[in-house]
Amino acid sequence: MTESQLQELETKLETDSRFEQAFEVDPVEALRAEGMNELAGEVENEIRGLVALAERIASDSAFAAAVTEAPRPTLVGAGLPEAAVEPFLSSLDAPMSVLREMAMSANVRLSTLLVTLGPIAAYVGCARGR
Image 1 (cartoon, rainbow, N blue to C red):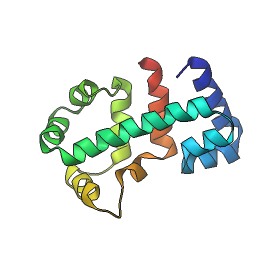
Image 2 (image 1 turned 90 degrees about the vertical axis):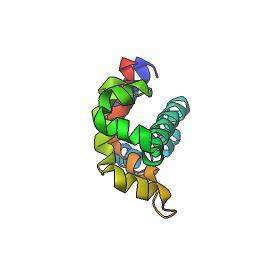
Image 3 (image 1 turned 45 degrees about the horizontal axis):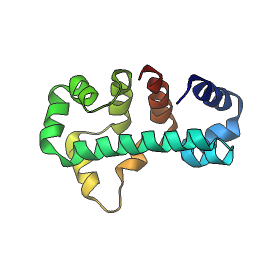
Image 4 (image 1 turned 135 degrees about the vertical axis):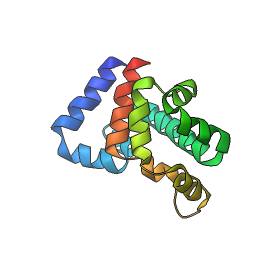
């Protein structure tokens, strides 16, 4: 994701309330509707990565224990940018046991927790540090 793409996204979010609302509901679709297809693809990949990491925490008890004991080094070691660790953990906003139960439930998907404006915007903003 280039600096100009991030700037374009930030400007759009700050100046277009309709876009901001659509982005909050579905960031990928909102970007595509604005013709920002390349950025939509990158955000979609970022979201997939976040979902995969959350699902790993929920399904891998050894990894979950490592995240519980030393979240920053464990998550950075798993590829999450250091600046994104706190927003990522905040976006989950649930104890590990709850995450495990949700991952096993057919009715509740972890991705629903992650696809919100705050965590995605925070994570996208942290991607600059990569």
